[in-house]
Image (cartoon, rainbow, N blue to C red; front, side):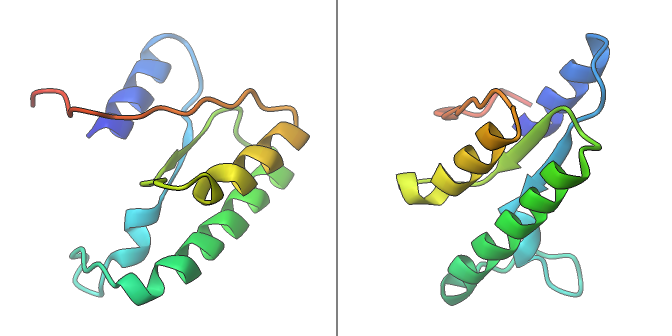
Length: 101
């Protein structure tokens, strides 16, 4: 909800649609239902980092959102470094409360 609100706001203000990469997407089963598997999280984070780096290298998006719980610096430091190397301005947002629906 928060990510889609940010995306809509970016477009409404004249920007291009951002690329959104969400860790939750990796936990969707064949029925498109969310199933968290703790033993898979590290592997899924690695896959998301590869997808992120591919998006950076292809250069199609000026604005990329990583939607993920990053409770450790190690969870986002590689994303940060890769984005900075490609000239992106990096921002970290902590969502403490979801907006009312």
